[in-house]
Length: 161
Image 1 (tube, helix red, strand yellow):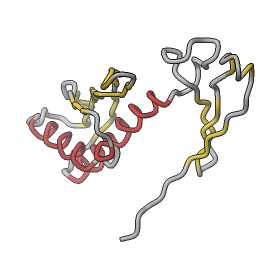
Image 2 (cartoon, one colour):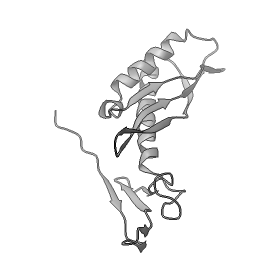
Image 3 (cartoon, one colour):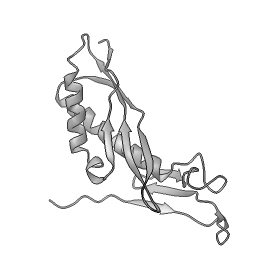
């Protein structure tokens, strides 16, 4: 099977004094569907005003990509198991830490998915953990990174039929 290719265009133009390190780190991410996303270094890495607080930073995007991939797999697997998911929300968090002298990395991502089912009765929650484990196992992004990823689901919520 041939590989699948994904692309993104990243554009930046100098705004400020580059030599003095007082230039903006704001830039644009462009995707194949036409979406443009304002991006920047994180203000925790590059202090304001040289970063853009309202933009997405690479570290946030990394955490969101892991969370999004996990959710998409979870939804598909739950549907295949005949569960009717009404909503899914994740308050994912990534932890940046020093991994070697002069080297930082996101060393851990914790997913905290909150799932609501359309159901008249409470199912055995063991299915929830099993589907999260399978979703983690098959998630393309989780399989592509080396940081630890923990899935800590919130208690299942029911929404009446």
